[in-house]
Length: 248
Image (cartoon, rainbow, N blue to C red; front, side, top):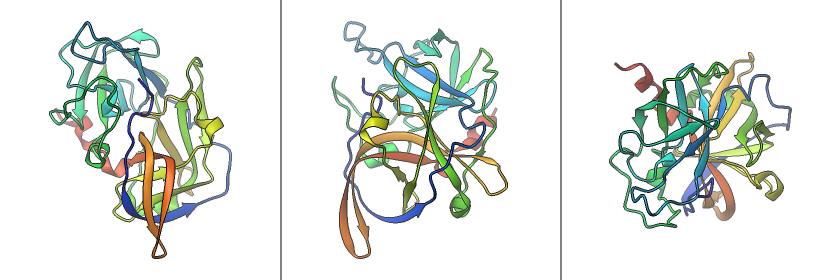
């Protein structure tokens, strides 16, 4: 399974944001984990290569990643590994629960509505001590962001990869953030579920969102239409229901 699974075409009006390319903020790579789905399909005779995503531990027992960790709603006991170790887990909140459309093997496309719900909160029984302490982004504070950094994993490398961004865009409907990586930066990354980290002027670390898709977008800017190819779609943190974590 590819790390980034979807190809979408959206007509959106974009508000560009930009900043100077700077070093990743201190602590930006904390809590970033590798998640392996040991069975992608319900049919035990139709195993695909192990699907590997990235996630971020936002508490000692809580991991946030992309909902397409599961291409079908998982049965009880569906195996997962965190950083190479099989874990006992439960699902706190799944943005695709009950809404996963029927997929054929090899189908890597999703639609825009699916991207908007592409989040998954997991409760992990085993402790994750190196978890991140982040404030989820509020839309009203988008203009306060500094030093945006995509933190992810690369195939065959146990260390987190931090990629500072020079520019990014957010659509006028507040649904997505778009970022672009060079071919060299993109190669071998486990992008799905990767956190985008920023800071506020006072140094507070901010979870800006998580990577959910890679594809093309048609954007409208200054009354002209422009095609953006091979961009990464970030689901903003203000679109992710963090209040579900503390529900009984």
